[in-house]
Image 1 (cartoon, one colour):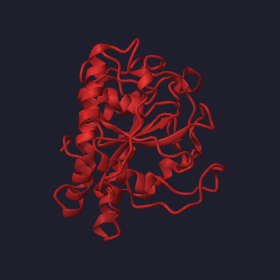
Image 2: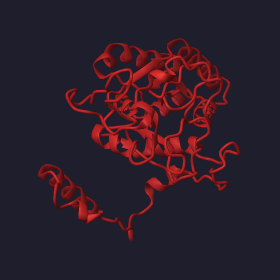
Image 3: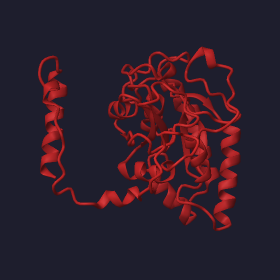
Length: 287
């Protein structure tokens, strides 16, 4: 089950092929077995997760489930979670229990998603390798001697290791996109104001933005459908209609222009990195 995408798991739940309780227990077991080598989680909320999974199954049985109801998710430990430690990977907040949920967390809960726990990160999001956490560095699950990137390295590593189908992250100057790249998953920094920052511990308030971290673009679109939207509690939130992000998955790419910062392709660029970047550019040109 853990190798399936969020979309596939959503479909399996809708078809009755698996229950949320079975799915949640499966991922909790994987976290116990595999996360000691990766250190992607700071807190695992097993008791709460199983209770949420039971409620999700009841909601589905009653016929009022949403597309994501019963699907597990992990939250970067920068988002406030009511009754659960929110540390921002710092010793200073090691005993901080948030009295409320961040809007992003609340939206995922409203969609019926099951919180597996809180993921590791660079302390106060100030880093790009996930080596500065009070709770120890996160390892790249593909090669544990390598870094996963940061600051959302725990979320990226957890998704890549198939410890969760999806996770939330935050991005100021690359903190979703860079670890997603290093761990081989999909990560999106939404347009500023599209996703509420309320309850998200700030790094640089005029740049911070929450976003999805998933296996595929389709999974990211599904999370964005639930995550985005106006929030009166965030003064920078944009009050505009949220599109169906999944509709963009099948739009033609004719006429799409992609900018290439060629000044970064020259001096100081590792030859192997330059090679794969050029190969990626060639693939885009074929599209």
